[in-house]
Image 1 (cartoon, rainbow, N blue to C red):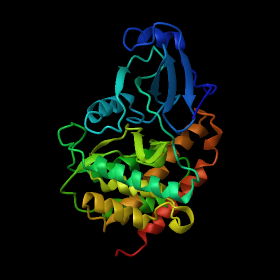
Image 2 (cartoon, rainbow, N blue to C red; image 1 turned 180 degrees about the horizontal axis):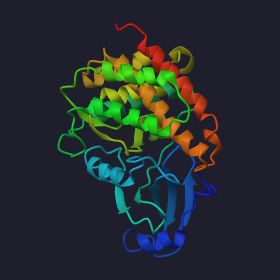
Image 3 (cartoon, rainbow, N blue to C red; image 1 turned 45 degrees about the vertical axis):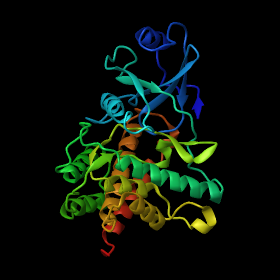
Image 4 (cartoon, helix red, strand yellow; image 1 turned 60 degrees about the horizontal axis):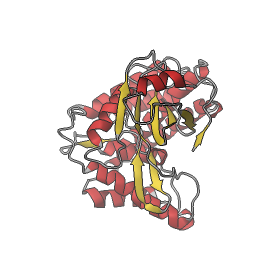
Length: 329
């Protein structure tokens, strides 16, 4: 969904037009800028230029954590992945000169589709569940060893360490459940996977577009900033952190068990040790929301959606800790 640009998140249309003129068709004359309303961190804009539609991605306003919101990296990932995985949009231009609009940004193609995360009919929910899982399985079957996106050795250790560091940099209050979860994640690391894959690292319903005329078709996978090469079960665990447990007979959405069964059938992956990855997914989501709340508490964003994120962080931390106490099956 697009809307007028939010106050405080405006882009200098004149400077942007001058920079993109001659680099992408359509920027010879005046352009229109709108803003996509979804998302909680990076800012995404619709550019209408000379009868063409483009999408611009840039980091959030104000200071950002080190290595976070890396638009140059997302551009390079998409440039590498688009030729081998069609749901990844094509990219056109990367600008690393902050004097243009105040930050690094890139421009990519606009893909059409709907973000379906509300309450559709049971038939639609079931079809979207299938296409969502199948697209993730397709992503994990892409030959990615030569794309230069990361080194699988020590992947999980780096993930746990990196997100723990992000927590310490963004926390405002002490949260014992997070301390316990970090200790558990570090001490219970599973054996490294023998078959690493492309990992999206933020695969969720908010980050895919569905063809509104064919709910079995994913038209785009978005938000590739954190993508890398490593253990694909990290994607599965992080996705399950968002996947509400529902009764399929009532709502149509797949349960977690149905999700795992279909994913395992499509990929041949052993998912018996998924609990570790679910804990990590809940922990990582808590850190992401804490980073957003940290910016809100410091006045770097005034988006009212973030007002209660501190409470949501506490709930996620407790859910992650509770899952560490479950017996291994």
